[in-house]
Structure formats: C-alpha cells, structure tokens
Image (cartoon, rainbow, N blue to C red; front, side):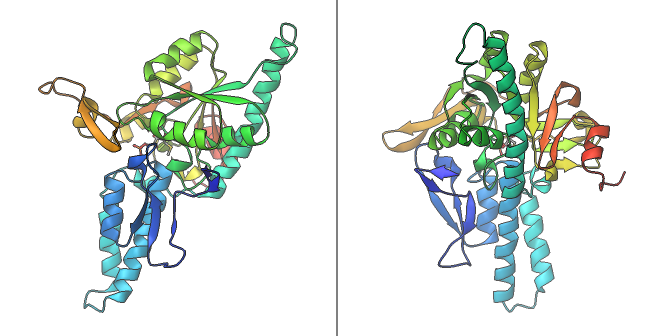
Amino acid sequence: MKVNGQHFRTIWLKPDDETVVQLIDQRFLPHRFVIEDVRSVEQMATAIREMHVRGAGLIGASAGYGMYLAAIEATARSTPVGVDEQLARAAAQLKATRPTRSIADEDAEHCRMIGQHGLELIRQLARKKAGKFAMANPSGGGPINVLTHCNAGWLAFVDYGSATAPIYAAHDSGLPVHVWVAETRPRNQGSKLTAWELGEHRVPHTIIADSAAGHLMQRSAVDLVIVGTDRTTVTGDVANKIGTYLKALAAKDNNVPFYVALPSSSFDWKLRDGLKEIPIEERSAEEVKQADGWFEGQQVEVRVAPERSPAANYGFDVTPGHLVTGLITERGVCEANEKSIRALFPEQAL
Ligand code: MRU
C-alpha cells in the first residue's frame, strides 16, 4: 500500500543484497518511517518479540524470513552441527517469540481477495443505505461508516491487510467510506498504525477512544464493523485484540453487522472452543501503566497510573461465533459456524 505516494510492503528482501531482510520498524509509527535491516535469525526474533513487526499475518511472514536467514547462516557456516539441526533451533527460537505466530502465514493475494469479497458487502450496504435515505436526501446516504479495532491493516500483514482490505477496495473504486478507528489501548495500534495507514492512503477516518464504540452504534453512526482475527476456531470463535468482544456485544445490541476478515491460514482446524482452547497472551503491566508518544523529536514514555498499583495486561479476547455476522475469507463470505466454514473449505478433513 501507499506511503507518501510510494508503494510499500511491510517486509521484503533488500534489493541490492538478498542476504538482508528489510522491514518497516512499526515502533516509530506514526512519527517516523524507519526501515530496519535484519541480518540474522536472532535479530528477527528480537524484531518479533519487541514488536518492530506485529500482527498475526506479518509475524508469520517475518518468521518465514527468519528461517530464510537461518538457512543462509547454516549453509555459510561449515561447523560440525548439521544444517537441519541449526534450522530446527532457529524454528524453536522464532516460535518462542509470541504465541500467535504459528497460525499466521498469510500472503498478500489472500488479503487482496478478502478485499474483493468485502467490497461486495460494502456495496450492498451502500445500496441499502442510499435507498433508505432516498426520500429525505436525494444525494444518497453518505459514506459507509466502518468501525475497526486494533490494526488488521496492511501493517499487520504483508499488503492490503484483512479488515482494511474491503475498505481500501471500496475507497479505490470510488465508493465513499469513512472509518471509525478505535485507539486500542494499551499499545494504541488503532490510533498509531491504522490511522497512519488510512491517512497515507487518503481514506477518511476518525480516531475514537475504545469506549466510544457503543455510543456511536446507538446513534446509528456505524454501518458495519470489520475486525481481524489472530486465531479462529472451526466453530467460528475468533481471538482478536483485547476489546474486540465488547464491540461485538455492542454491535449485537444495536443490530450492526459485525464481520471478521481473515485469510484461511488463521483457522485452527483442530480448535472447537475458543474460550477454553486459545491461550491469551499476557504482556507487561507497564504497557498499561504507561503511555508513549512523540516529544521534541523523541519517543518518550510517561507514567499514567500510580506507580505502586498493580495492572493486568491481556493481549487478546475471544468473541464467540454467535456474535459474528460473517467471516470474510479469500474464498468468500461464510457464517461463523462449523457447517458454513467447512462448506467453504471442504478439503479440511474432519
Ligand atoms: O499488535 P499485535 O500483534 O499485538 O496485534 C494483533 C493484531 O494485529 C490484531 O489483533 C489484529 O486485529 C489481528 S489481524 C492480524
């Protein structure tokens, strides 16, 4: 997608030296656009653990590039340790970085297809909305207001994103869209990353506090919610960034369609009960007690809570399938239940 008018992916091989992987270091966004050179599997593990790269799809892709670097190192070193053994070690090292990695090996083409299927949904809603408002306002119903949470944008994948792919497809096809961007405390992936990438692509958007979503839905200011997922059960439960579940509840109460966009690699075909079976990442309490920002040309952290108060920092929550209107995948849209999911992916044996 576009950065300052130029096309970028989130990760790529350095054009003049293919032993080096380059990635956008997302810790500095939206304040600075920094490209990091990664030369070893250790460096890649650090980049994942310390969230230079993040988002399930991009974590998967980065781990893949990490294995590529490990293979280069292993073949370059003529040590008695076998190449296979060195690669197995590298795989274990990457696996230990963040728990969502193992389900994420998305590719840009799947995200592009998600965009096309999601675009159809947005078109239908736009037609419905224009029809509803035709008497009162002959110019139509205005833009489709999409609410999203966290960053399931191109920065979380390799290109296009999952939740943002339909938004970009609609915007690029001339269909007016406006996005409510939930800030997504404590790390603010919404206000920092989603807002930045939408802005770079010139998509109209407004940042809101996480707690404002229900209020907007009650006032009919949200036509549709689209979020991503880090891990999805075969029964349609989705684990996504903490706060997603509350948005799904508010959407249900206000009859707002709540869609989850995902490449099929986010399905875990063995899981049936998201609440019981999906481990939830617990991160440092300091992330909740502090906020970071840009001050006089530097990234600074400030304390926003009493120093001695304990804090808990859950990274994800699980939204049960019955709260999800539909899943937008690279093959099309299905309901968030086993029958519908299996009908779309019949090759996945029981
Ligand atoms: O920034 P992260 O890696 O902790 O956040 C994970 C996510 O990107 C979100 O949960 C996103 O909505 C899922 S889409 C890959």
